[in-house]
Image 1 (cartoon, rainbow, N blue to C red):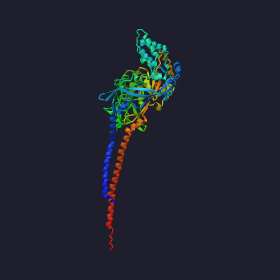
Image 2 (cartoon, one colour):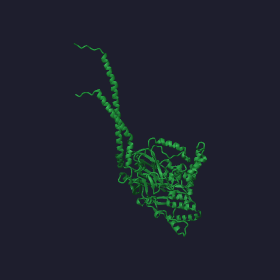
Image 3 (cartoon, one colour):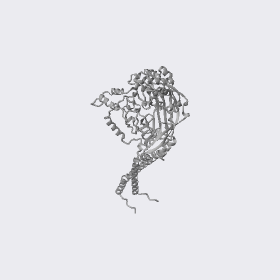
Image 4 (cartoon, rainbow, N blue to C red):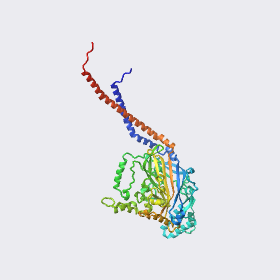
Length: 616
């Protein structure tokens, strides 16, 4: 029979277990503290774009196909708009759905592998099963190339008054001979990828060439004189597929995918001389640098920086708007060459996609705010007078701000004065005018004028903004920067401005007058009733992608589940060690104080009791 363990041996065992538990607690705590840093370091090693790696293969050709849906607006009362000045009534047609794949080609590395140069080609495959209608559907839409041609000719006529009569004459002749008005009837396939011959531009070329010693040259700006919203963009025929130069993340994982130049240019040239508007920031939006959470204490440092910055503001409305994000998550930038600018995204909320936790990022409201309301957007107003807006702001503040307390005397009045210094179009929220960059009166907005001024929604019938349908968002796995779900939504519009010297544009004044007269609530608001134009929607698109089950499981098995497992093991060891240490301490305290006291009481009791004589 085994001997019972003595009290001393139990105490020694408890001490040994306690020491081991303490060591495990220290090791587990240190491991947990540095666990994230170690994982991030390992991810940073896997991220860089290098030949022969899994990262390169997934970057070169996106594994998950994208879906792009086109919705065209059919003008159902074009005759009434042209002849009677009625408000346009729009019918949304579609969606016309395509599967989109992307592939990077002509890849070459430079700067010891720290940068990569490539062209990206997109391929579109029609998906009838998810289409409402047919590509042969007929729609009545604005004649975009003809309107763009008219806009250019009108600008030349205004710039050279002595040629105005001549220019207006040949423009009207081209419209008359080609029997072209503001609207035309087209097939959906022609409007999208196939294109159609533009008769008015052909006639304009013939007229100019038939005039001896013509004072102005004219050649069709269109390749083969064909126009389509996405013509030449399907596959390798795309002449606008220019060189991207991005960081591979080899030198610094935080710069992974960030654009260094596009078309060998470090910045755009079509906006005002501004770092904010012209600088190319961010990547192409297909993936982001790893690590979306900002370092601990960042928010406090950022708030302190804001307080310091508030004392140094020299732009009028920066009392209200700042560029920093205090959500504790990184601000993300995407460069979009189609709109000639970078767009930034901010954290909205946590979400989950196929069991993967993610951060949802969206375009902030400031993106949709008019240049007149947000000084940081002022450089996007190309129609403003030619002066330095920053210098204007400084001068304006010097004249209208009380020098004693450095705050506006009447901020509302001051705000209105500042706003009125911009042309009417630059006071409209929710639009981006890229006409100067595109050489055509094209306006970009969110679908159905989501986040735009109500005047734009009221200008046409059939528009119903809805955040669920028309908001852009992207869901990103925060540790790796991998996009697991996204929806990019945008609307292409054209600006129509009345002009008495161009026949098709004469009745537009009646259209605009009728719209303004029927919307009296805006007539009382400064700026809106001064806008003498009509922004007419043509098409909106929705580009979506979501990680499939296979790739989601791959991500979980290779990274997320392993992180959970190791994190769980460390937490289990820590908790078990704490429990064991607690039990040992309790036992040692029990032995030292409780049992020792009992032994003392027992010995005392034995000494005081009378001893019995042994029986003989």
